[in-house]
Amino acid sequence: RSELLNREKRGECTSLGIEPHRSETNRVVIAQCWDWLCAVDKITVLLDYRLKDKPRFMTLTEAGILGKIGLNEEGLGVCVNTVRCGYSGMGTASMMLYRQILEQKTIVEALGIITNQRRAGSLHALLADKDMVLSVEFTPDDYAVILPEKGILCHANHFLSKKFEHFDNNKKGIESTFIRYARTSQMLGSMSGKIGIPEIKRILGDGNVTVKGEGSNIYKRWGTLRRVIIIPAEKKLML
Image (tube, rainbow, N blue to C red; front, side, top):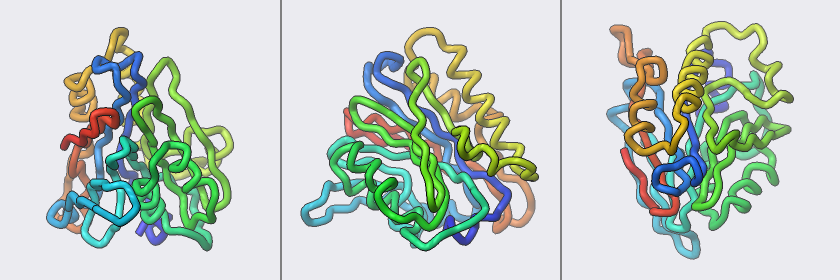
């Protein structure tokens, strides 16, 4: 799905991560707005996978996609964002990578799922366990890891790493990603104390972060379908 839509201009999703020392719960928290075609809302599902010899996990996805946003019983969580480099390659489809991530036991193993195999497309994964959170941007032939600054990080639909930022040069129709990223960064940066779940909900519901579905054709209309908050240490996924 992501590889077929690699040249689409519209962006999807805004995510954020908070380290324990900045969290009101003293635990890692990751969260995101899931932005996608409004028509997909009718086929959105929360799947509970119980596989032999692999961690049980839950994933919020759309019918036909095996894995996306989710959390497993080992306390490994993942949020996702589209980023587009403009080309695809021969390798594992991006959504299958997310499914494979949720089948791992540690964040090290999850990172290895991205870095140790050939990838078909480009995406961003926000990975978290009970102790840490990190961002991974990847293309078919390279990747970059981004660590939190002052205990927080956020991501939208443009590349943040220096090695990839040229992919966004001269792109048109993606202005929303810069506004959503700037507003999320601003709101997180303005919080001097510890950040709680109410503050995260306020960010995800902000008018410059959420995407409002507009237009008469539901099959072309984009909007925020769900807001997700994950606390890996508590094995809690909230919608």
